[in-house]
Image 1: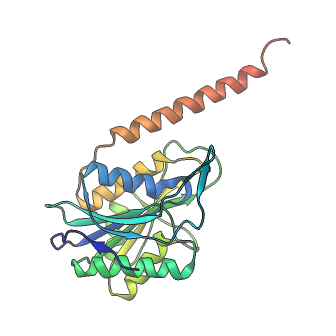
Image 2 (image 1 turned 60 degrees about the horizontal axis):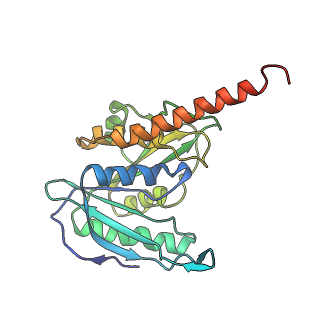
Length: 238
């Protein structure tokens, strides 16, 4: 795997990356980060995925998955996201190496990935943010920004975890920020916002959360209506 570079950005220190995961926390957060900072694409990798086509009403639709790196002049970071998580171990390692190869060529020293931490199945209105990191210095910054360490032991699977392991092998430092979610099948904009609030504090950037706030309020309103509807079904005499 190799990215096709269309423009060469100036040297930067940080990479922020995330691919769709549980509740699409990373996908939502990366989309919002790119939009809010007005980042522009500079490199693209087209993947050999999916291994199928979609049909709708007898018409076939097909679009390959892709991964894209973004930047904007004046910012000390680049961002990377894509359409999907690679399904195989070999493809996942190749993608991570391709991202790190290009990032290091631009001067990146710190890597931040975003994701979800699944706790229970209920809707969480005020998600907490957890972290796993590679150094004590980064841990101090993460705690100061309002996040907590992942408790006990476990795994951070997929791109959002493996990228940090391979970054460590290359002598880079990094952290994974994980937004607390309930039902992993639901979109989780509140968890995405919570992760971005911690990230923005660490990186010293300002983000506009208006669109995320609007979606969060819509979800809260829908759930409130659902609760009212359920409770009213048992009321009265039939």
